[in-house]
Length: 406
Ligand code: CTP
Image 1 (tube, rainbow, N blue to C red):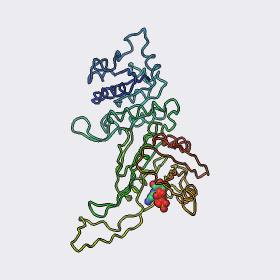
Image 2: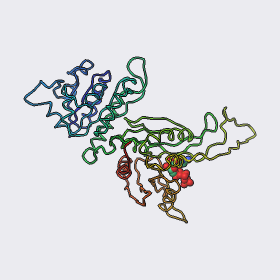
Image 3: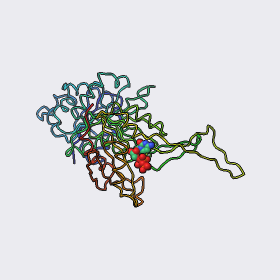
Image 4: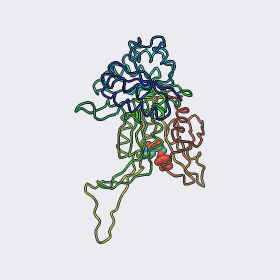
C-alpha cells in the first residue's frame, strides 16, 4: 500500500478531487488530503476527512508535535495536486511555503504530479507558462489541462482532466517512480497515432485498422516521464490519455500539415500513426449513388505525401528533433523482417524505426506488442512481448536518451 498525498487547490474543480480521492482509495492506496484554505471554501474539511479517514488541516500550526509540515511530505510515495491553480503553480515554482500543502511540496522527495485547472487566459499567461516550465524542468509531472467547458459559460483549455484519467496518469507515474525519474522533463514530444481516412464522398472512406493504442501508450509514457506532449490523433478508437494536448485530424493531408506545423518546436517526433499511402484522386461532394444497371464507380487513387520523409527533409541538417518512425513488416523470399526494416530506415532517413513483425498474421488492435528498435547508428534493441505501455516505456528508454531539451 502506497501513501498518496492529494493536494487540493482552491478552484471550482476541487469537487472533482473527491472522486480522485475515492479512486485512489479504491485502488488500494492510503490517501492523505491536504487542501489549501481556499479549497475548503469549495469543499469542506468533513468531506475530505470522511472520505480519507485521515485528519485534514491547511496550516502548519495544527498537530504541531507531529511536525506535519515535514512528516507528510517525507512519508509520501506520490504527491498529486488536483486541481492545481495558477497560484499554487506559482508558489510551487518559487518554493514558497506559507501553508501545509506548499510545505509538503518542499519536503516531498517522491514523484509529484500536478493537474492544473484554471481559465484559459490564466493558463496561457506567460507567468503561468514559465512556472510550469520551471516545475517540469525539476521533474514535476505537470499534466496539460483538458479542453472543454470551464466555469460559467466559457469553454477552452484549462479544464481539469477527468478524475479517472488523472488517477491513471498519476498511478503510471507512481509505478515508474522508483525505476525511472522524470527523464523526459522539459522535453517537447510530438506523437501521431491512429489511422487516416481518405474520403470518396461525404460518407465513405478508405481506412485502415490502426486503433492508435501504441501511439497513445507512447504519449502516456512520455507524460509520466515529465514530457510536454502533443498528440495528433487520427480517428483513434481508444481514449486519449490525460495530460496531453490533442489535435484531431482525419485525412493524411491533415495529419501531414498538423505534424509539419508543429515539428519545428518539438524535441522528439514519433510517427506512430498509420497514414494511408493512397487517396482517391477526387472527393465527390455528394454521396455517390448506385444505379439499377449495376454499374460501379471508377476510383482512381493518387499517392499521399510521405509524412515521415517530409519531416526528415524539413529538419535538414539540424540534429533536432529526433525523429522516430514505425514499421509493420513481413519477411519474404528476398529478405527477412529486419533487413526490410533496415532498408526502410535508410530510405526514410529517420533516427529510429520501431519495427513490428506482422508475418504470422499477428492481429491489429491488440493490447500487447513486441518490437525491435533500429537506430541509424546501427543499433538494434529488442523489446519483448508485453503490454503496449511497457513497450512504450522501453521505447523511451532507448530513444529518450537522444532527446535534447529545447
Ligand atoms: N508514414 C508516413 N507517411 C505515409 C506513410 C507512412 O509518414 N504516407 C510513416 C508511418 O507513420 C511510419 C512509417 O512511415 O512511421 C513507416 O510506415 P510504412 O507504412 O511501413 O511505410 P511505407 O513507406 O508506406 O512502406 P511500405 O511501402 O512498406 O508500405
